Image 1 (cartoon, rainbow, N blue to C red):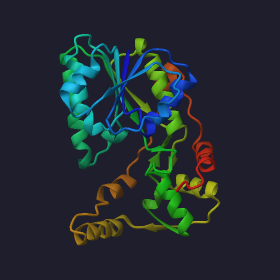
Image 2 (image 1 turned 30 degrees about the vertical axis):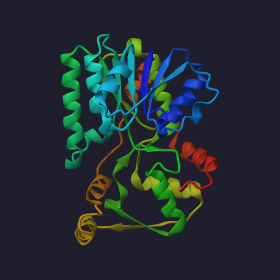
Image 3 (image 1 turned 180 degrees about the vertical axis):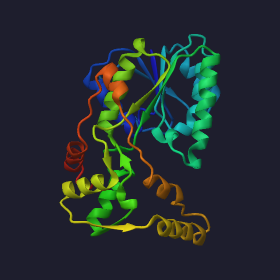
Image 4 (image 1 turned 90 degrees about the vertical axis):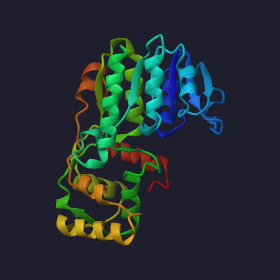
Length: 295
């Protein structure tokens, strides 16, 4: 039996679709809250059961993990602590698949909490003889609420001018949600071959931010003028906004990360399990066609 958290979330729903398409036949226990809308599971072809409770309740999680050979944690990274504790205390020692992020590779201080948390998780896994993998998506896109490419799309539809810093030369490699879901399935269905490791899940194309912006504009059929703002001026502006808003509006880390290379290779998961994402442009075209309000 497999336990999955976060199956009703954004990437979880895409993963559920892949499981259905592949007629996955192993029993799946799905962690849900009392208030969770379960309508997506109506007439499901899968062998599902539901563990209803709060992931922040350690006693509930320990009961939910009972009997699972593998725990696939997709839910929020900040809610992983009790999942890890439940896995480590389970007598059957389930394999742990933890969805995290490539943000742990960032040099900026606000990511340090996640690095420290994961260091603790790894120590606990090793101490208790638990095998594990961390799945690290790059920037995820593919729904109107992805808060990544959709934000840029909204801007390009409304405004003809877009500010960039350092000429948009930082690299990026966004991953579409359907490619990410396919990676989840590849990792889970090959769990018998897994060793404790990290798997980066990125899109097909490494590009600069400016190249990405131009592709978005091309797909949306908008004309955009890119204005380069010197980084010191941009930093002064976001700091001014941070202080004048009484620390409520904070774009400081976002600005820093716009100058940081965030392209990471998916060679490992491709070589081992045949992961093959589609191009950024092709995925973006599919998304725009699917969601008329994509922005």
